[in-house]
Length: 192
Image (cartoon, rainbow, N blue to C red; front, side, top):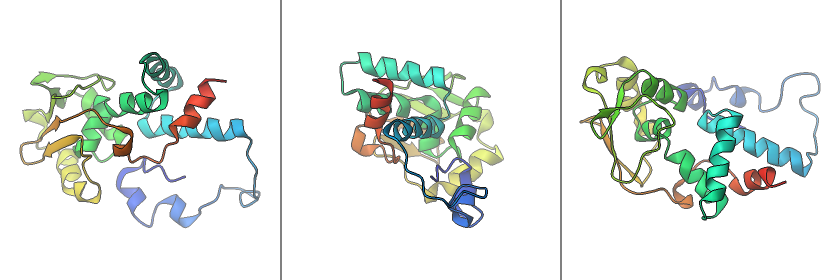
């Protein structure tokens, strides 16, 4: 499945899924029937890779979502969407989630005027996320802001690209998460 992890390349004809939409090798075009477990595992792996997390960290988010008292799948997606690296990507300050994670780690982002270099930092409603003054002329930041027209900023965020700022207006609900993720299969995977 096309996960758009390579930034701009996934929007062009050079994307490997556009050229060859089947797995490599001699038996790549054979039709396979996957078990229920295999489908759940693939969905979990796909969700992990979208957000660029390891197994231990992803499982920690699942445990936190399970204890929250909300619907577990919706709470999981909400926790993942409120990560700082994901918010930087969603605001359009980075071309990919991996690049957003690197920007946060290299001290290019501040939250409410304070420098934050932890990608897993959870933003809250009302937080102001901005690119730091010294980092605004970076070519990656400028290129990401120019290319933001390809994707839209979610309705729970408000972006001001001229001032290199963004505000978390609200906590995301399930309808506002546009990733093709079936969170109920992830919950079923961890509940077995």
